[in-house]
Length: 336
Ligand code: TA6
Image 1 (cartoon, rainbow, N blue to C red):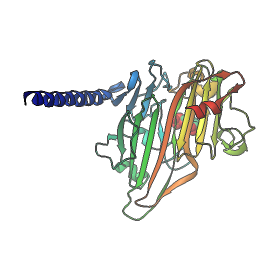
Image 2: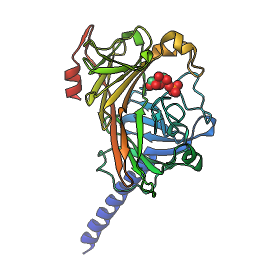
Image 3: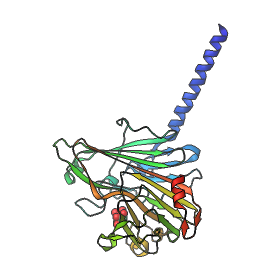
Image 4: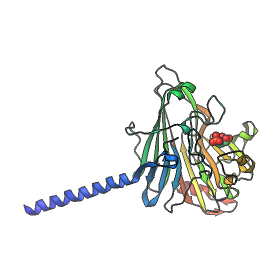
């Protein structure tokens, strides 16, 4: 009898230790803290030292680090962490309007709004196992409703996967009670950190149509090789594949972009002259940044009351076997 009791006590204590470790692990993995200018910030501590930082201001990811503590995202050396100025860098969210073509401020108000932590989100597709995540929520303020008279719930889940991949899952629901639909355009305006823009290639957008923002959004067809950079570039590629790769030769690194519900992709680098006109961008910062933005622009999203739009962006960074002039991106894209 005593032996049985001993075995039961051992099993209970083993379970308790495991459970406690898991809870501690979870608690350690989601840290709520203060960032620059005392702005609320959440840090996701992942496996093997990976991490993600997101400000509740704009629900803006401003840091994504791999297991070697290397920063994958670019934040301007002159970024102004002071509302209402959006933070220049990381992954700004452009909603409900991409660009300044429309009644709202450039890229909409989501990126300079205060989001909250969503403690009770509706059921979500099964989360990536062994991952760490935080759910954020944006509801329109009375000010927002004056300029964009639509009620909505925007739920964003930011996940740090077990391999250090970063996943942004958006759910936007029309909660209008007056029966009116609304339409919006959208982008995750991702600023990748690169070693030298002149040594970077983007693969996966060959032969596609694009709108050139430097030529009044005139429509062109890409000439069919990887995109390289030697001047200001501002193009909206249309109906793009679900996978795009950004190859950084000097760092021997490839960013793999996987997207769902985001058919378009914006490629932007201001280059030297335009960079000088951007007050919150360091003069030479353009050399270390490249925006490749998963977006929905050409065909605005229309939601009837009660309808919900979902989109998913997954970013990973993998070592790349880069052969000057040719990269085996298909293998990179398939292999990861
Ligand atoms: O995504 C490219 C772009 O629309 C460029 O035209 C440029 O305006 C860039 O966004 C930055 O916009 P922002 O409002 O953040 O200065």
